[in-house]
Length: 116
Image (cartoon, rainbow, N blue to C red; front, top):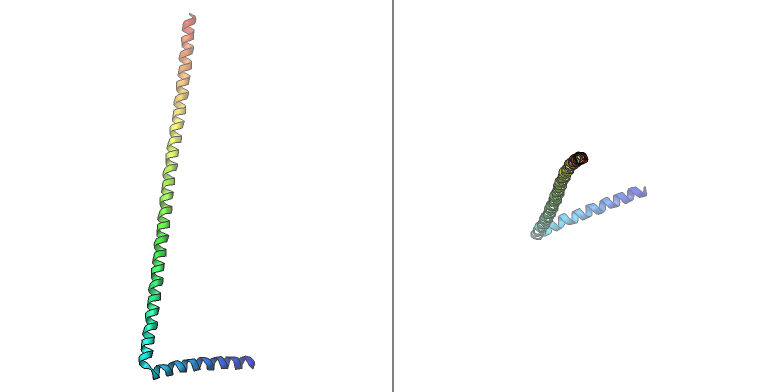
């Protein structure tokens, strides 16, 4: 019962506020028109400001993504360079080993020629 009374009172207050608003518009239509135009202007400006903020945030987000893509591309290029250097290192190790073997063979062959 008490809750119903509170709800009824709140509804009456809401209706009174709406009635006062409508009466104010009826009594002062020019001022109300100016007030409504002011309200619409304020809403428009607020929407414009929010749109600009979203646009700036989107641009910043795109810049961050581009920087991340650039960093990933640089890392990929660096990895490829290291892979190429590793392959070249393996080739040079094999070449060095072959040259060492050839040097050992030639020096062993030279020692046997000296012994004769």
